[in-house]
Image 1 (cartoon, helix red, strand yellow):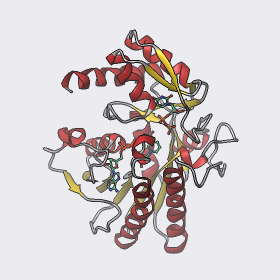
Image 2 (cartoon, rainbow, N blue to C red):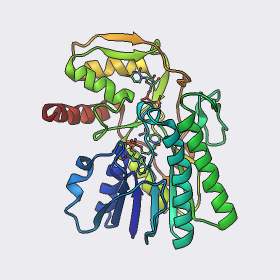
Image 3 (cartoon, protein in one colour):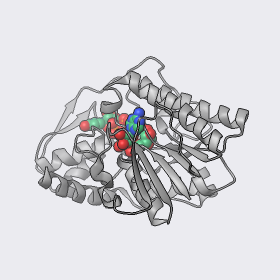
Image 4 (cartoon, rainbow, N blue to C red):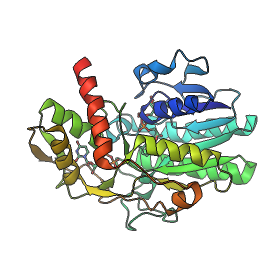
Length: 311
Ligand code: NAD
Ligand code: UDP
């Protein structure tokens, strides 16, 4: 098949392009390089079945493909809050453009949605049926509400125009190819530990997240795209929950770092807890994550170790 990956030069997008090529597909990688990097896809550029397109999803584009994975959108709070108006435009106009394209060429289109649609959740763990607890006017809203509108658009194009859609709600995913200045917690802690700098916990560190290694996530995303029973939304993530304090301790242990932990102000609207209920993904996709936190952190630490030597 010919597959379009928007945001294909980013962290998840580059792993997805790699997997799709390994599975024998032709891949069109589209990116505006806001947080994506050519280095992420450098190893793919000599493959005949791979093509790179510099384009912004807020502008329409006409391509002939069978599948569209819509990943274009900055994912780290630091990056998505840098230009919040652009962030919401990317989710909303990007979705309209990709859905319009899918409708016209009769392609199947998947939206990379997020656990952020649940906001600061009162229901725990989060099931797909939960409607969430999102602040519509806070500093995270450009991302959270943008992704919620994107889900609405996907469902409405499906109901109104029978567009063939899939929606995955991705929970915190980490791994090699995150940017060293990405700003998300796993990359921040690892880079700080490897450089011997203070490890910055925001708040008291008792807030929780459930961390999924990238290879597990990509397996579930591609399986969801190719099954015929369910359009989603479906949760994808690793349900093992950790406090941010536990994550910091684990990174220090695995890097053998002498860094000390410091506590800084908690950003506004930071969710207190997050854990996916993945019963649907288990049943429908026959999928569960295989890489535990220790193993995934070791692979990510090895990546940053190499990267920091080059930087
Ligand atoms: P990332 O920032 O590494 O990747 C985003 C990519 O989209 C980058 O390559 C960036 O340059 C590109 N992009 C941004 N705006 C664009 C635009 N207007 N036009 C074209 N390209 C644009 O982040 P990621 O972690 O790889 O996330 C990928 C997708 O998955 C995002 O949609 C994100 O919301 C979603 N997601 C990720 C996570 C996670 O934990 N990694 C969790 C939930 C959802
Ligand atoms: N966090 C932290 N130190 C950092 C970066 C993040 O303590 O250097 C915290 C952040 O406040 C949040 C959690 O780690 O509670 C996860 O943050 P991240 O930005 O990775 O993802 P999100 O909040 O979007 O889940």
